[in-house]
Length: 89
Image 1 (tube, rainbow, N blue to C red):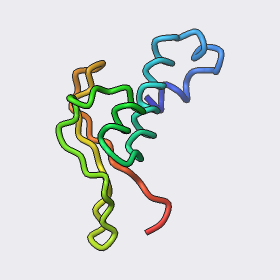
Image 2 (image 1 turned 45 degrees about the vertical axis):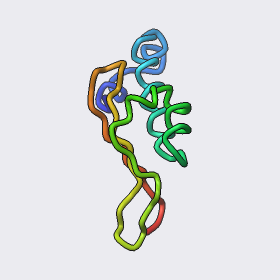
Image 3 (image 1 turned 120 degrees about the vertical axis):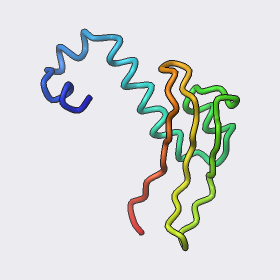
Image 4 (image 1 turned 120 degrees about the horizontal axis):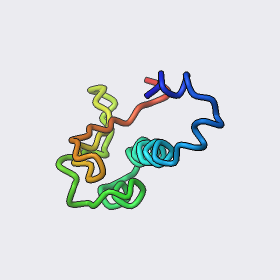
């Protein structure tokens, strides 16, 4: 995906509505993993709460275990693991 973006001009990307929808979908999921609970994740990612297989929104800094959501993405039929990052450790 990154290579594709590097090879395309902004004008070419603007013409590809399907690619832009897909990028928006994954951006929403990347932001939604910062939610506080399953319901908020579902709302922000536009993913049904029933699609969430496992999640832990409580960050445990002592064990360096980040928050995560494991879910079935209905739009791609893929099992997705979204991991919350951090700016500092």
